[in-house]
Length: 256
Ligand code: ZN
Ligand code: FE
Image 1 (cartoon, rainbow, N blue to C red):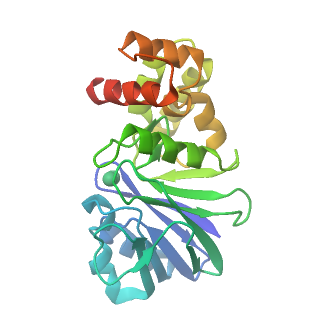
Image 2 (image 1 turned 45 degrees about the vertical axis):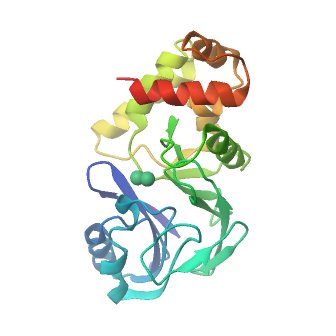
């Protein structure tokens, strides 16, 4: 089983998982890179998984239907190009002989879902859309800080070796913010070095792992004293983890 990040637009990735014959893709905002990858490797498209309704995640769905041998899956509570199989919390999708578990992760959008595949050939794979990014998290377009903090906590409860397959290459910008939140965090500096080297080589910084995110991602570190102190300096009224999270998220929105 091969896991590949197909670059799309300026900073999106369309994740593709394939077995050499059949492929599943996640959040095809654009059909062209998917078609090119299928053609290049002689793959059939077995399924499309969608995490949320934004155009950069669903824009290529209809153009891919003619070559789709299976179905489109997406969140029950969002407007996804019809027809699609509507998924709720706890659903399981069977594709390529693999089970993908669905978890609700509202916050970026109201009905955002994530897919977890536990142990294809080694570590679990997490397709988390625009919820958790490497070094950051999605903007709160439709949800509350409370919801997003709870969603991130659910993702953070997965095994440490879970591979974080998010849909944007925002890592270096996120790490600049992470370093501002925690100037004394050596893991952030070391991870920034390795990500810079990857980008200079033209390679994705993803997938990350939850273990890495726990060490460097301020949005998963709201109960760390240093993170709380920085949030307090930005106006957080107490050390409650949702208050810290909400303050960090607003700070990040205006951080340049
Ligand atoms: Zn989005
Ligand atoms: Fe997006």
